Length: 548
Image (tube, rainbow, N blue to C red):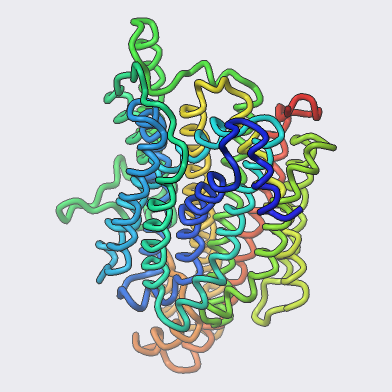
């Protein structure tokens, strides 16, 4: 049965008037919401050159986009309860379209951060909870599982096809046209949406917990921002430093990173206390904390967060390897990643059928084991010359694992709560999804930069062909973090700094070796996270009847 046939069959459950059109509209919106990050990852080199910025600057934009969504997802879900999920969906799409247009026209990194990371992030925070809530309200039973499988497959297709779409458009035209295309798709969705059945107006809408919004949003933002800047500022010992008004901020002589993370954690703890107080007083809360006591929901959310960490971490490392180390353009990068696109989409669509026979827990565990094996195989293929066959097989296996996970977790999360709580569950799902994406880009990027810096210094110090003055100069630069760059640019930069040609070549060779080691360690960290994620699947539904 094809995806269209399956979606057409959805009308037998939930709302009798619901057929394939609602899921088609919602899946299209999901595709647009997810496409951005994978497009950005594969277009890093072109964006850096076009906006005259750095890889770290684009990494900031990628992480800030998912961070804004993660921070505001609970707010988006609550607004769905206040103004209605259908209206929230439409408003969010309109905001997202404005952000996409701003991004397409951005002349520098600052405007890119405003248009993409902020405005699009706000729009997505309104749309994503509404998507899962509308699915849960429109379909039930097996049809709901199929609907979430389709949306999961579309999300997987967006993550995996983004490199190919973005690569071709970036190489042949410009990365900006991807965002122009998003504006067109958003307008089309808004037009078609008018034909869908609307849910009734909210009779007694809850009041917005403004203090809860501020505590949760700022707490999440500080925590992930600290992790993001760890590669630049250091985890404990200060490398670079936050500068305010020309003054370097190094509290007690330490890096500011642990203080940011602790401050974020403190605000999240204050959020929990605040929500408990409002519950005692009988006031409306931003989040019903009783939801977090549901074992299946907790397992689904934690596994989803780890899934996104693994996926977005991988989609940060691989484009850096293919473009910076191997020198491939965006389209060639997308072509190399295409095997993952195919297997991820197919596995995501087959996942609901497999869960009917083996239960979501087993399907998710098989998916994670496939990710562990694939990450280890990818680690072995990272070298100065690409092993095409090994790389393609590894990516295909990675796509199978990711697709199986994408097909299960949305239905597990939404099926574990009462229908009246689907908006809140959608907000939690979106928060976990985007928090994991933020942490994946930030943490895996941090592992790469830290490994590159320490490895480069160690190799330079052990190289007898390099003069002590050159070794000291490299050590001084490494204190602020070594940037990711092509080996040829490193050699040229060394010559421009007055290093003799032969020693500049030696320096570049050491940098290239350190870069490969850093990429391998980053992939090793991804494999480790995938293995650890198996622990979070313990409370997923373990029998077919539990997942009904």
